[in-house]
Amino acid sequence: MALANNLTAILNLLALLCSIPITASGIWLASKPDNECVNLLRWPVVVLGVLILVVSATGFIGAYKYKETLLAVYLCCMAILIGLLLVVLIFAFVVTRPDGSYRVPGRGYKEYKLEGFSNWLKENVVDSKNWGRLRACLADTNVCPKLNQEFITADQFFSSSKITPLQSGCCKPPTACGYNFVNPTLWLNPTNMAADADCYLWSNDQSQLCYNCNSCKAGLLGNLRKEWRKANLILIITVVVLIWVYVIACSAFRNAQTEDLFRKYKQGWV
View 1 (cartoon, rainbow, N blue to C red):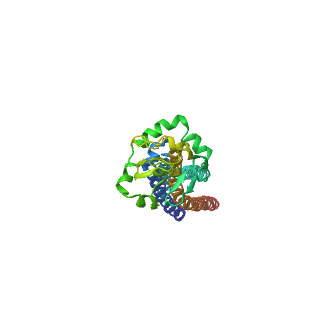
View 2: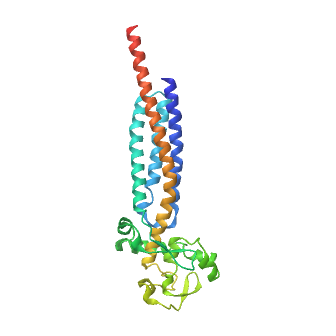
């Protein structure tokens, strides 16, 4: 029984360590300017990471102190948390699968169409009732002003592949409009205003820019998609390790119970 409990304690310590990258991924997501504005998606991963840490600590104490009740609680709660984490992963993968990006000839960055993203993201993130608040929040960030510090010439700007989806959609007009570059957030003399409805919405007012454009909504979704895809890679690896740890912990717990029952049975006969 002691050997099995020691093994379970080690496994729970490993599960506790697995909560660190989960929580770190959630904090990284929550710290991004777009996620700071989109409250809907800010904290679920952080909360799951903290809960896994607490439950793993409970399991570790239960194994270390030989408390079978705590171990049983740990196994039940961890199964629920792994299930919830899998649901979050699958949901995030499904809603971020459609990609509204497209290449622009002669540009290092991509541009984005709102129609290319999932209906769930469009309806729950950038619908009309949310956009006024999101637009004001995005305008208060340094997402667009920092472009003027990073790029001086048109060639530098046009050839860059480091421009984020949010910057591409919100900080400049669509390329099809034919605006002339002055700096990354100042564009003049369009040649094809009829190319896109967003061409008429562009403003050189630094508090307006293209924050009212559909391209900005699409850029926000593109940013969310890119960040969640990165986080998903870490979460997938972590959840695989958690499942492996959980299966071994269950086996060790069952073996410990069987050994304990067999020992009591033999003692009863002796």
